[in-house]
Length: 146
Image (cartoon, rainbow, N blue to C red; front, side):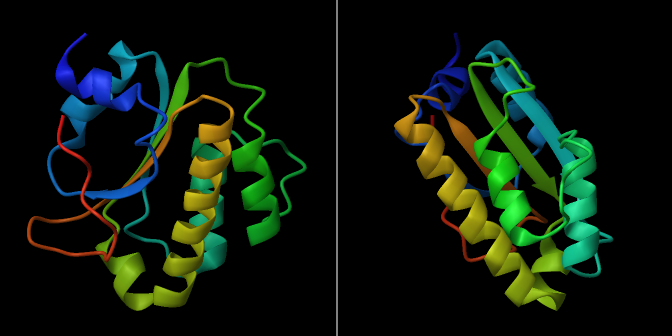
């Protein structure tokens, strides 16, 4: 297993990070590590409703998903419909949503961080990567180097 796949296998380091490089290689490493991967383009999310719709559709949340932050948090902690050694959610083109909808972005990051902590307690890596253009800073820490 290469160094990036090894990194992504570590639940102790998993969490919410910024990643401004090409996510394709990262997704390949995650596949090698046995993680389930979702790549979600949130570049056209104009509000919380759009963000939740895009993520819930990509992650195939149950039809009973309530479309609110509490339901989002609940679904992230119950991924029982997916068999994987861990999870990688890549939020692509995040700059617009982060800049124009900062309160919603911060709420999403907080919930993703709580989900990562929950999964750490289960011994399962859960990574959420906030992706954007080179030089852009979302305020999230950078992905640890492999």
